[in-house]
Length: 173
Image (cartoon, rainbow, N blue to C red; front, side, top):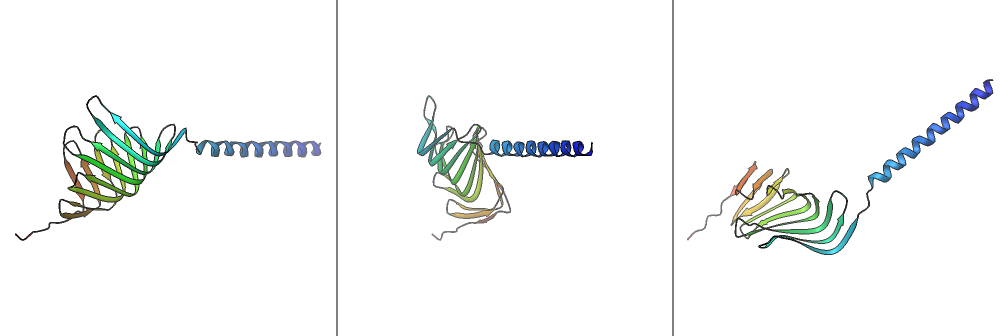
């Protein structure tokens, strides 16, 4: 009788351990999602009836089910309300719907008068708002600026930042 209980308990315990290991392997496989498409040296255009609103260049592009991942990416945004264009570059760009995340060596340039550099930028394509949460440096016309975080509303031309250091260049004429 004791031998039957011992054999059944070993059988039950081994079955439980095998099922536990199989579940963790399935979870690991689901976490590493394979890319649906990938491109090398890609250029993508967003067109409207009147003009091109967005151009994206990237060395490598990986399209997943819920996001696009791009390496050495540049996005050029042509604003319909203003004459100029915006350029955002980064080593890594992630796009989820209309929300862009720029990581590592990120830079934002508005024509030739505003330039910002940081290791992260977030851009919302629907609201056209650029933000970040870490330090940045840059220039506005010939004046240098640095700060902790950015809020730049492209539609209303509102620029906000925390702990800003702004140096005005005074030209002697």
